[in-house]
Length: 295
Image 1 (cartoon, helix red, strand yellow):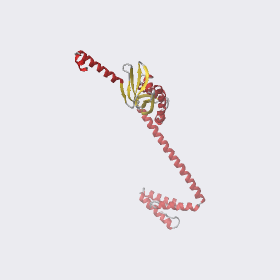
Image 2 (cartoon, rainbow, N blue to C red):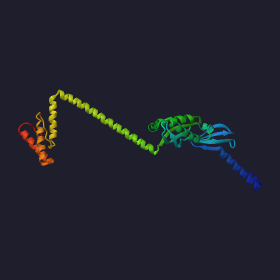
Image 3 (cartoon, rainbow, N blue to C red):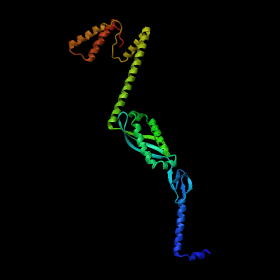
Image 4 (spheres, one colour):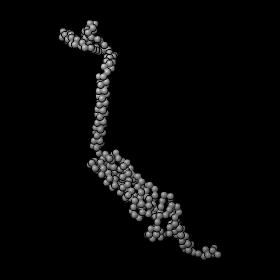
């Protein structure tokens, strides 16, 4: 029954039937959408919001429904370098990285025209405003606190858009060349100050110990005498000195007078000759029992 009917159709009718089949296939294909796990479709029916659908297989009414696809993955925004004047009038160039994701697909579509562009411009403005209210040293030493503060401000601003700011990182702080030299001088001065404090602290502790030792030696004369003998022993190891001890040290003036007389007579004496004369004179004094030699 069907075959005779098909035979009766003309060529134009065959073409029209083919076109109709193609249109039906296209309409059915446009009504079927497959969304990935990280995607959502915000559906509008005749201009009115229906809601967000997905993931998986969804059906749309052809011509009547229109869907806007939204990605729920974390998006990285590179904030370009911003020229900032800090609270203490230091000019710096600061750039940052913002990590955000869509939390409410419906709000991200109907509350803001382009949430990525809006978030990027808002990040630049927030970065300039917040860093311009703090000193330069805080930018270098308190980056973690600044990151959290910027994140909190951005998150509060983007929350009505259905966007969640997950993290903010200040990436680089660039300074003029003269500021690098100033920071180097400051660091050098700080190191020098620490070094002087350490030396002074060492001198203070040494003086305290010496005062304690002097007090101890005052109360223990025998210990003072033992320390004196130990000092003589350490000096005698060099074997290039003559140590004069005892109370009869006035004979040292006599020895020096003899040396001076020899020097005047000969005009000039070498160091070896002076040593020889001094040694001979002290040997005579030792032999006479007036001076004890510990050379």
